[in-house]
Image (cartoon, rainbow, N blue to C red):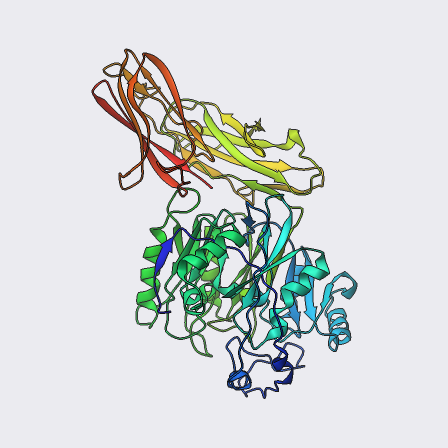
Length: 596
């Protein structure tokens, strides 16, 4: 399949069970001199790319694909990297330095894939490095390489709220032991595994946890047995995607994984590699930065693209600062023994991710196409307290400011209702901020959704706020994720002395409530006299999505609910829409943001 750019409604999930591949047991690969040694000097590590010996061993051998298991119960939510994690999956012998492992072990459990022949050595070396082997989650299983990001499990929550593992067919089929690691993890952790036959790799996949994911067009090229729409459908069935952004890779060489040059930091922020203008990848990187910033995130706003400059490194290529790992409230970044550039890269993350602890780790094995992210994979908290809220960035109407959040305690321990809070403060622009107030979030009509309102504020007021939740399992989460160290901020800006759009010629259009919204919102309008009314929903290009009212309507106030569907009854994608009222000879237009 040729390289193509296709950005559209896509669909994501995984699952599959491998048959055979016993040929691999007979492979004997002689390492090249430039291969990396593990940190304990036990073995030369297989590289990320396939070796000539591996290719030769499988020459003429049909590579079987997994069968497709029935997908999990819908609807599905794919876990994002910045969701709560209880562990991190790595492999022994190690491709990561021990100081990094000790840092990870402060907050989460080290889940270590290790062969039975290396198990005792691993325990002894961990003990000597100050890591208690009794506290490590040892997954004793045959394996081939260190790339747990690429072959490891992908986590989803199914329609019943239970965690599951999606098992793709690893795009290194000549490494069958790696290909089976998600099955080993599922059996070890007692988590169901759903396998599928799509060739994929974790380094070429990132998701926002709200139905939108990214890959490079490598996913097209490696799956010529499937059409693009088939791939979309599979992603929807197994991963719960509504949008799959497949973008062109930045280079004709390398492994073509998106994590070598871009990373989602949250639902609407992407950090991207920046190189000097004379670098061969410069044009493609800049084109992709423009492209991604033009796409609509799940918050309904365009992605914010922030850049981190990646300087040349001695072993070829440029620094791979984007190949970092987000692990709860920490960002673990590869560094390259260049004090000025390393510090600038760490500062770029601190600026983009306030409240996170950003830490750099140097290692001789870091490469342009491979660093920290490729060698580690977060293990999702199966009992996570999940909080979702799309921040307000502007407020142009006089009246209470609604705050709406999804709060789901997967532990089923129950929410601490007096700890479901919106913390807020309001002050004139340019004045010192006061202390935060707290308002309790109350249950909304939709399950697991909660609402509160910040009181109406004068125009020119700065409003800061954050959402906080706690459950009886002891978990505490919020939005922003690093609250209270981080908070959202916006300025109230509405015409002085005007409490709503003015009533002209006998008609008035009110703000949508709620807004942003999911799954539905209500538009309301008032007529002084009975009149012909046209109420429509338009997209950003002005195209009509849905006609809600078209006919004569009586005097008084009227409310119309829109459930985010078009004329054919299909769900529309997340984004910004306009609702337009034509009545009394006047046209009024307001904005509504659909989130998913």
